[in-house]
Length: 586
Image 1: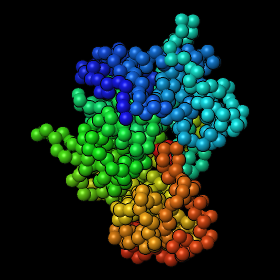
Image 2 (image 1 turned 60 degrees about the vertical axis):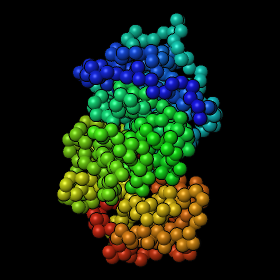
Image 3 (image 1 turned 135 degrees about the horizontal axis):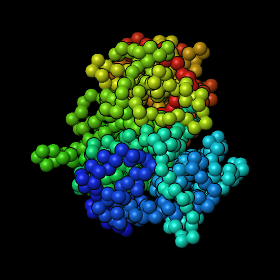
Image 4 (image 1 turned 30 degrees about the vertical axis):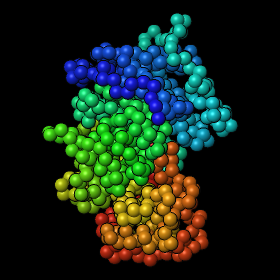
């Protein structure tokens, strides 16, 4: 792999005094961060973003603050001529990489609402989603345009991303008041949920609300004078937008990936030598099972994960690489910053740092960060539960979404007495640490009571080295359900003769409930994933329900046997039922 620009040029970095000026600006927010940063930047003409070319991954487009403003104004003038006005939602359904961020800037400059759609989303679902939002128009790519046209009539305009001007011509008009002066509560973006319980929902982000997590990164971010970041996040997602805003506010050299697969990320790391890598769990799952050469990881001191929390097996495989700074220089191994969050939470609200010496995991997501006013565990009647008892997670924090676009009823059902009900099942220990057990719709209701899938998946990944990924879901068995596992094997591994026995041995070693059966995934239908690589457990449940009318992979049939006395999850005694809950990260 080659690069066509010097990555890591430090001249664009913002000094401490410049960041102090930004921190003192109380009007700083999502809608104006680019212009505010331009006003204090020492070298606004120097690139700090390098956007990977999807057609030629070895090449990149260097972007400075001034170039970003130039592209933003060109896009804004085109959108304005197309009739887009303040408050209009506009769909952006493009390839992965920098395009979503550029359209995000252009639309926000008009006070419009960028409605970002992951490029991997099925065009039929994307068309239904954008129709429900009521977008003024859509900007997309040629192949996606053809698919959207086939899916139904287009709203307003249906334009191609490549046709928008990246500079503003002399005759192009912009609003008299430009850029748009956002108020605190003005919407600045819509991002979709994962669609694990149905059609994706449109989560709103506000000018002040969404920026709260970025403001503290002016100081508290693992980046020093020589750091370089590689972002393998989906940049159509709020997390991807968030970290590009962070890079802008700090002038942090950042390589923006367009291919988020593990092999592509390893190739890029070998070429650009990042010190900080930020990605979603699926990318880390792939990296953990690849042969990471020393050149790719030699400079890495921090891996940052957001959205769903990562698996212990994947974290352990990564932190043995790289070097961490310490008082005497550096020491072998890196750190992994794990964050539990969701679109609705506005940012990762729980963080945990793991290093090579870390021995305790157990799905611990740590304690709430400082901006969280209160985090509680609630039962189905919204009564607060004490330590050790599983229940629904509720958070009070100013970072929570203003709600779902065009769905006030769902917004209200997702709240209780100022708490946002995240849809996660957790427990809290006596020390105030939280442990992530499941999503509410994914709890398995057995004869022995509720069983939680996430600790089971952790046990399988830790106890079965041949397994690269795992999903445990409920399959119906009369009035109750039984757990069933689907595993993805590492490349080149011979499938076990009896996968159920292997899985249950790993579960028994940790004192967890047994599965009624296990099968090895042989194709995408066996292990369905969403646009960001997240396992779609609803789809998997439906797939298995169809397959298991006959014998399971090991020759058995699901049966309502008890899932085990000591093996039954002793933390699973709260009657969590599946319902119409808010979803996690898209």
